[in-house]
Image: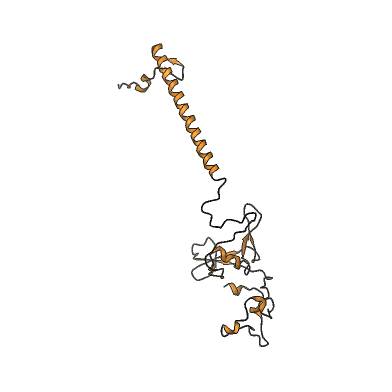
Length: 221
């Protein structure tokens, strides 16, 4: 029959903290309790000092940013007594006005005035709610096999998915010189060289703007 080894850690502690009883001679317990009290006070003092240093550090960090502007502000300082609106900073003009390939935010300033997105988030609702804009309703999804035939969503032969977007019928471009036609039904403003178009600098320079033209799905294929 084996014998259990005594718990050496318990033998070194002369006081039972749970029962509140001394396990050895009273003098030994008194000495042990005094050392434990001293250690506890020292730990508490260190904790207070650490907390004080952390409070001082974070207070100084917060106050250091109250009076001075950010050091990496890319905008020039505002004139005294004036409020200046800073727009997007771009070193080059927009690269694309085609929404299919555009990717920069500065280009959206122009594209949003030309094309209405098919879907968009409601301006005020939180959490965000997607709603139809240029579409009649939400897109529908069709699932196709390898032959392009519509099949069920859970069919193991699904290879492709096709999204169907139905545009609103009341979408129109605003009148623009690009839509102006001559008596033969051909574009009125077609120039063979730069000199022929030199007198036209902006839209109001064109006397004819044409009529409104409906926006159709063929233009987004």
